[in-house]
Length: 142
Image 1 (spheres, rainbow, N blue to C red):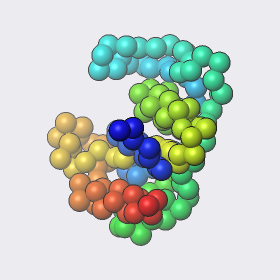
Image 2 (image 1 turned 135 degrees about the vertical axis):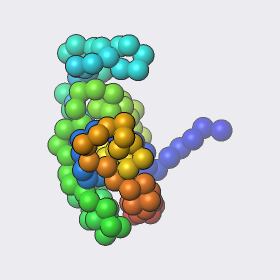
Image 3 (image 1 turned 45 degrees about the vertical axis):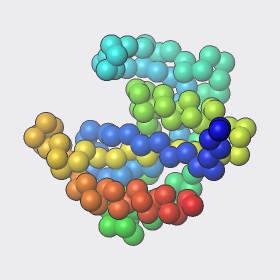
Image 4 (image 1 turned 120 degrees about the horizontal axis):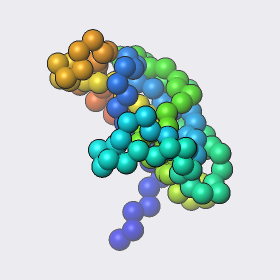
């Protein structure tokens, strides 16, 4: 049976961010300053050759910021998902969903408190607060 979602929400972790940040735009470029977990390190490569320069999220990102804040978590709009793995996923999902009447987008989340020893000095968010916020996002999009 083929899955036919109404909404696709991608999540990724952004070291250094202190808020949950819905992403506004995905750009058609892979450019990594460090290798990914598989050792790949693209340099100014298009994600989809001949694809649009960018896709905007089709999620109501400003509404989601309100929903996240109402759940008790900090939130802000992000205008850049970077040019690494998260942007690649965001762009590829937007490209796939573009003609399928599927709302889709990407949300970056901060490190969790349980990761503070691994990433000293970087902002973290309590896991319960994060889960509550993402559940609120899912409910708002249902």
